[in-house]
Length: 194
Image (cartoon, rainbow, N blue to C red; front, side, top):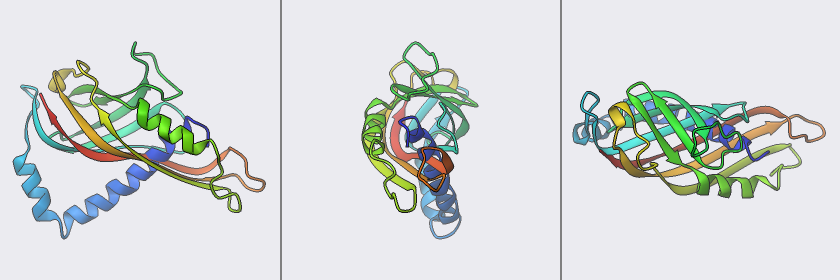
């Protein structure tokens, strides 16, 4: 798995987790979801954000810098995501920030440490050479980049406790770095405020 595939693997894992979470929230966890929603305080018009936010960022079959995000709880929003350098230029190597371009505004996450952990694991792929497949999982605290919020997220701050998962099958045989099917999933929650 190339170092930029970490994002793809994260996306797939996030999508699967998001689907499972939706099913659970709609069944046995409905009361818990309502309690979390009641505790959250968010006003897109004023930019006030406070409480626990749940985040899923995913990419399917792509090593590129582009993802999708869904955020629930204190922030209820969705939209495209792109990995960028501090100057805002697109970062195909996933070394610095992820910019969430949501409907009500934008903010960035600093993904440098979690991306480095992921790259270290993927340097020895395929993880399962007999089946030309990979599964990688790392965790880290991922902060919101100070001053990066715009629109309804102006002044937003906080940290997310996130897991980054990559799951893929490579083209076989023999094992090649070419993707047959892949998901990258970055998921977790954190406390946010503005």
